[in-house]
Each structure stands twice: as C-alpha cells, then as structure tokens.
Length: 157
Image (cartoon, rainbow, N blue to C red; front, top):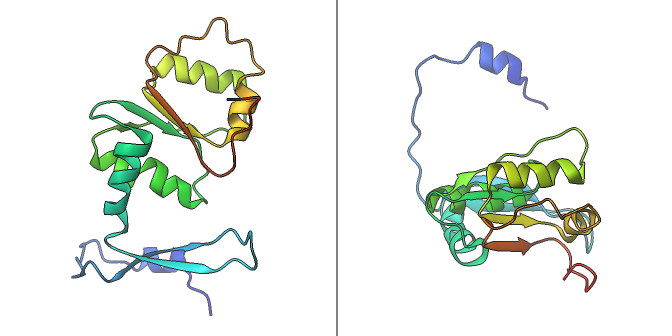
C-alpha cells in the first residue's frame, strides 16, 4: 500500500491549503537507531522544534547572525535538531555541507573560508580533522564546538 508521490504532485492543486493544527498534533516521525534493539518509530508533535531552542542557544551556543555547521546526513534526526529548528529560531546562518565523499582537508577549508562561529560533529569527524595539517588553519572565528553521537576520546580532547 504505497503512495505514488509523482502522481500526487502532478495532481496537486496550485493553491496552498493550510491545514489547521494544534501543538499536540503529530508533526514528524523519526526512527530510533536500533542500538538496543529493533529501530522504533518516535512521534513528535509541533512543540518539538521549540525544545531545540535550548539545544541551539545553550549547547551549540549559536548567536544571531553567527554561522553554524552541524555535520549530519539528512537521514538522521540530528539533521533537524542540530541544523534547523533551534538554530534558525535563534537567528544563526545554517551552513550546509554536502559532499559525495568526506575529505577532511576540504571540510577544514570550508570552516576557514566561511568563518564558522559554531561547529558540531561526531567525534569521528574530529579524529579525521586533527590528522590533517592544521598549521595553516584559522579557527579564530569559532567560539564553540560540540560533539554528538559517541564519546570523545582523550586523543581528540
């Protein structure tokens, strides 16, 4: 029982019909990673984005007009809570970094070129970054870095 999205788009009205919602209505579903068992659907309602104001302001420490990069594929929940909701609400510019293949030197060049102010990535990314030649990198604009997804080992810290 599948939906044909192409057919639905072809037959969709040009007029946007706003649907009345309440804060308690379902907004999106995530699937858990399945770390402790089978993946499970997790339902979030419309107050979910508001909770991530705290994530952005007090954990990522984004600032109005600052430039923030969270390294995450769009298939992960971290994409939403680490790049969109709280960060935009707090006024940060969201940096999208999308490549076919992760190349640490290219990410470092992007961080430097775009003069990021805040940065969040899994520790694995940091482990790759510190193996590069950092002598020519200017990180003076970055005032806060965070991790998510796994512990940060002493080698990186």
